[in-house]
Amino acid sequence: MERYNIMLVEDDLVDRMAFNRSVKENGSPHDYTVASSVAEAKTILDFKRFDTVIADYQLGDGTVFDIFEMGVDAPIIVVTGAGDEETAVRAMRVGAYDYLVKDPDNNYLTVLQTTVENAVKRWKVERELRQYQSIVECAYDVIFFKDLNSRYVIANDKTAECFGSAREEVIGKDDFELMPDIKEAAKNGEDDRVVFATGEPKEIVKRMTAPNGT
Image 1: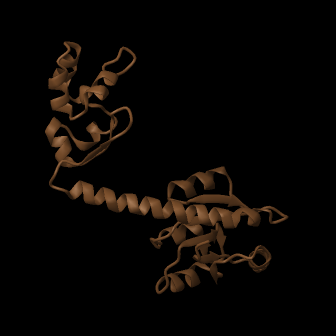
Image 2: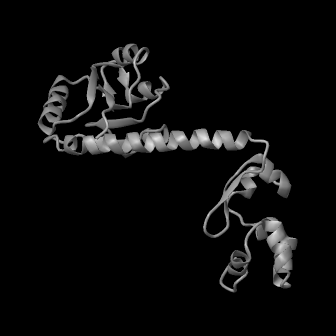
Image 3: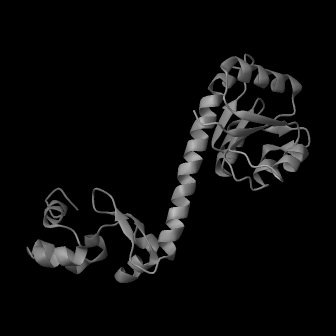
């Protein structure tokens, strides 16, 4: 199991003690740093990087949304004993990776380690995708990816230029939707022309033009 650096931002002493007890009892392999306020969290975050941040909603000198405003380069998991549905929705909208409700028996702590590991894995995948997408978008060559139904799921600006469309208009469509004349050629059985225009092999073109296809 990979070892993570985790920050807990919790102003309640009893909850901090319960958290520490849970970490020891479950034999967590991760390294933890605890901050008891927004100000303390900011001081620590200014010089140390974490793989994830677990933050209580209500803090003595602010709320978890103050943590979000710091631009933390890590997934943030919100825990609360006083939140409501509106708070949960707001937290997810600003980028919370999960939202856990504290219960009197501290059962939420039993799922916290799994929640942390899932959040870190998801964060890493999303970061790699963002980096990859940035490379694709800046490329001068035509770069695109299609799904199994031959619809564009990734396309850079160069690809969109070929269709005379904006990149947002290409995503989710197939070649027939983007090139009506090619769709007509397919209906007329001009397979070679369709293959040349779309770059798809004949078997894919036949599947795309099947009666139950697009």
